Image (cartoon, rainbow, N blue to C red; front, side, top):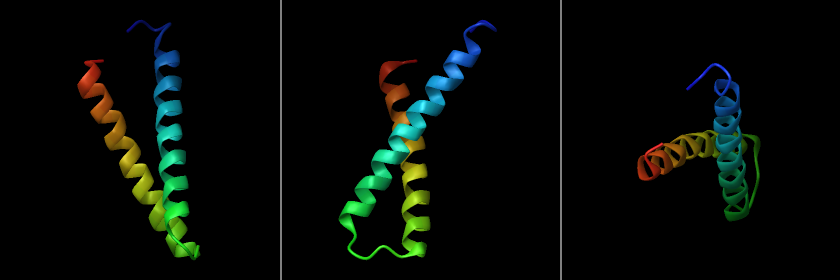
Length: 64
């Protein structure tokens, strides 16, 4: 990785994590009926962990 490609790689990583987080949070909200503040916190936290695991799994499969 050269200094020139480092910012692009960082932006792609952050974008991928945000996309996974948004998709998993949306899925969480669709599957629950009442939406209370505590459930937002739990759903967002769970989605963040899921996003990290999804990125790690994709990287393990594509060898990048």
